[in-house]
Structure formats: structure tokens, C-alpha cells
Length: 498
Ligand code: B12
Ligand code: SF4
Image 1 (cartoon, rainbow, N blue to C red):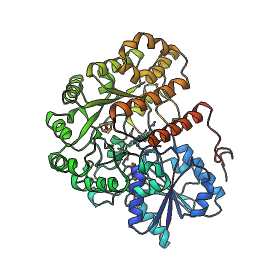
Image 2: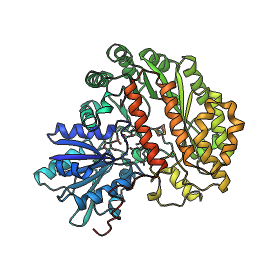
Image 3: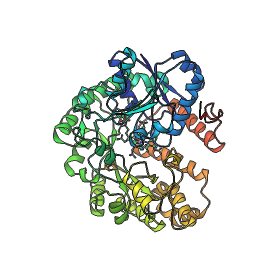
Image 4: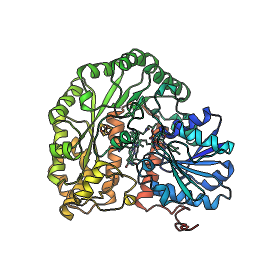
């Protein structure tokens, strides 16, 4: 059967979940393709491919766009197809299928076995109502099924399908920066993150944290390097594996077989002398560590990080001592936070000597503990469905006053700049009183991109890479500042009742 994946947002990062699913489908003998909905002729492309299944992988916020695209395609393609949704949004907000009658099934949790099983049953005309992980709409009824156990051995999965992505966007294949994943799962319980819900959903269904063997990870990377080229690696694991069996093999093989600088995420409690030494020996040039909040109460009671200020500062000094770039993740605009608390987060970054501090505005994603905390304490009253596509623009929470909210939202846009230019603090602080505006949003996105390129990934990219990136950023600006051109699925009404 032909399965078509539709992805809406621009392709600046590999959608590894989707690529993993495509590999599993191909291994089971099906055909797959990816189309980007922002490119022209979506309908013509869908009609030409005539898939049996259209698959969407959705985070919260963008789910509305995917629901609209799907509704439009159901009306306009002129042939029947099974509309399958998966990814974080439907996993934590399964009511999505009840609210969208054009959706035929949603997959909660891992889709590696669930999607091929659904497609196999659709191909052979077998019953699809009782497949684990799926909530299926059939004969006007929704059938709910438990999740199956987690994939026990990541080495048993096929390598992610890079071809599907690079066929849809050949430029990405040639771009030197590529992302990889060595593991799945995180055992911590941070209240704003999806992991505590994921772990609850999978309680008793297998080991949460799993990693590939270092040898297979490197085989996978070597194949990508050979076929498409590779200058710089970003590992997107929640926490890069640091257990001895993995790290020893990784350090032994990576320099010879891959030999490219890399960047990864590590929680402060895994930043030890031994781990940093080994990672540096393998070629690590930068470590990203989440701080989230400088204020102890917000960090540990609201966000449930379980991490002391001393732990954060010690980890930072260890990273700096070894001459590695230190980047951090920070969240401001947390429930109950005031502007003074946001400033504490800024100051701890100065104390750490952070090279680049990425800052987000808290979004209470559905089902997270922080969402309940914000609702129960009167900081948040909106419908889940109103969350924005991105955490870069505004906060959906209530603060003590309109001025407090404005200062936090503006400070968020200036945060990374100020951490690099603390002497500008006095001057820039005045800007936090301005009305939040698109210029600030654009400044932050562009500034962050430049710093990441210059400081975190100082590897040579070609002129062509620069030109293509500038044109992509250019189209982002045009869309953003001149208000986005209406898409066909937006101009035809919401299709309710169709
Ligand atoms: C790398 C990453 C990114 C990358 C790449 C994103 C991408 N689309 O792959 C970048 C930097 C671009 C990014 C951007 C954003 N991200 Co992000 N990201 C991640 C991260 C760290 C890893 C994703 C990954 O590759 N996972 C590994 C693969 C194997 O898992 P997977 O993608 O979940 O797919 C599996 C299942 O979900 C399922 N599945 C997925 N899709 C489908 C589809 C079908 C049809 C089926 C059947 C099954 C299925 O099967 C897959 C295989 O088992 C996750 C956290 C995490 N550990 O997962 C956050 C995470 C997904 N991101 C998150 C967020 C919020 C965002 C942004 C909205 C942030 C923003 N800009 O404001 C954007 C949204 C971009 C987008 N539309 O996807 C949240 C989502 C929360 C939510 N409720 O939606 C997560 C969960 C982190 C968190 N805060 O908790 N992200
Ligand atoms: S440590 Fe990171 S990935 Fe793990 S639960 Fe906390 S925020 Fe999520």
C-alpha cells in the first residue's frame, strides 16, 4: 500500500519519528512518500500519488493546521484514504479524534509496530478496530485500544529513512548539519515535559530508557555520511547515553569512522568529570544543559526539576573547564512567575558563563502536570485547542498585571542577546516596557540562529548553504511580517458537517 506523510512546517530539522515510521513501512513492503504542504500543488501531488493512507505527525499547536489540511483533502482528492494521526499531540490529547470527524485513527505512543500493522490490515482487508495503540473510527463508533509494550531493543529497528526526506527536499540532504538519536525515553518527572505522561501511559509496558548499541549508531551515521555528506552532528536525545558500555564503544569508534564535531543534551547530574572527558575525546564541542529557572521554588516546586543551584553551577564549570561550549535551555513565564523571577534565570546564566542561552515561554501542553498546576492556581483558563504552534511568541498564562506579562514576553525575546551582552542590560531593559511586537520576535529568531551558527557550530558551510538559508529565513519573514498568504485549506471554511 502507498502511505503519504504530510508535513507542514519548513524542513530545517529532520523529522526522525516520521523517518523511522517510513523505514518500518518500507521494511514491511509498503511504499512511502513525504510532501510538504507549504510547497505548491499539494492537491495535485496527493492525487498523483493516490495513497491508501495519509499520515500526519503532530505536536500541539500545529494539530489545527493538520486537521484543516486533512479535512480539505478528504473533500477534494476525489478518492478515499485512511487519515492517520500520531505524535505527541494525539498521544496526550486523544480526544482529538472525537473533535475531528474526518480523522480515521490516532496512534498513541510509539508507532513502529502499530503503523505497519494498521497498513497491513488495511491492505488485506482485515479488521482494524482492535489494533493496540490505535483509537479507530469505524462504523460511526470509536474503538479504543491499549498501547502495546515499548520497543524493547532499538537495535532491532531499521535505520531511519533519510531518503524520504531528501527526496522531498534535496537541499536538506546536502546540508552539512544532520541530527541523530541514540536513545529513547527519560526517567525524570519535570512537570512541563511530556515524559512523565509518556511514562505513565507505558507503566508496566517495558523499560522506559533504551539506547542503541554505539556500534549500530555509528554504522547508521556512517551510511548517512557516505551517501549525503556530514559536517556537524546534533544528537537530539533527551539525554545522550552515558553508561559505560555505550560510551566506551562510542569513544573508541566515533573519531575514526565519523570524525565530525558534535553537540548533545546532558542533564546537570550526568555532567561528571569522567563523562565530559570521554565525550570531548570523541569530538564533542558543545553541551546543552537545561537550567529552566534560576529561582529555586519555580525550578524545583513548579517545574519539578529536582536540581540544586549548586549542581547547575558545578556542571557548568566542569563543561567550561574542559573548553567546551556551554548552551542552556531556559523557560520564563512560568505559572506564578514575576519579572524578578525571570531576571533570576538570566542571572544564573551569567554566573554559569553560558555561551548561548536559549529561552522559551512556558506552554502548558495538554496532560502535563504544569498544565493542571496552572489551571488549579488560576494562571491558565484557555482551551487546550488555543495553544499556539510555537513557544517563541507569547504566553497563554495570566500574570499579576498586564505590564508584568508584557515585560516577561519582551524579556524572552531579548534574553539570549543579554546573556551575551550583559553590559547592555540597563539600556535594553527599557525595551521590555514596549508593546510586544513582531520585530522582537524576528530579532530573537534571527539572533539565535546567528549565534548557533557562529558559536555552537563553527563549521564551514558553502556559499550555497548560506544563500539557501537566507532565502528560507526570507520567506519566513515575509510570511510572518506581511501576514501569511491564505492557504487553500484555510480559504474554504472549516468544513464542519462535510
Ligand atoms: C528533535 C525535536 C524537535 C526538532 C525536530 C521536530 C520533529 N518534527 O521531529 C525541532 C527542533 C524542529 C522541534 C521543534 C518543535 N518541537 Co520538538 N522535540 C524534539 C524531540 C527532542 C525529539 C523528537 C524525536 O525525534 N523523537 C524521537 C522519535 C522516534 O519519536 P516521535 O517523533 O515521537 O515519533 C514516534 C511516535 O510519536 C509515533 N509517531 C509520531 N508521528 C506519528 C505519526 C503517525 C501517523 C503514527 C502512526 C505514529 C507517529 O511513532 C514514532 C516512532 O515510535 C522531542 C522530545 C522527544 N524526546 O521526543 C521534542 C518535542 C516533540 N517537541 C516539542 C515541541 C513543543 C516542539 C515545538 C512546538 C517547539 C516550538 N517551535 O515552539 C516545535 C514543533 C515542530 C513540529 N511541528 O514538529 C514537544 C511536543 C509537546 C506536544 N504536546 O506537542 C516535545 C515532545 C518536547 C516536550 N516539550 O515535551 N522539536
Ligand atoms: S530531564 Fe528533560 S527530557 Fe527528561 S523529563 Fe525533564 S525535561 Fe523532560
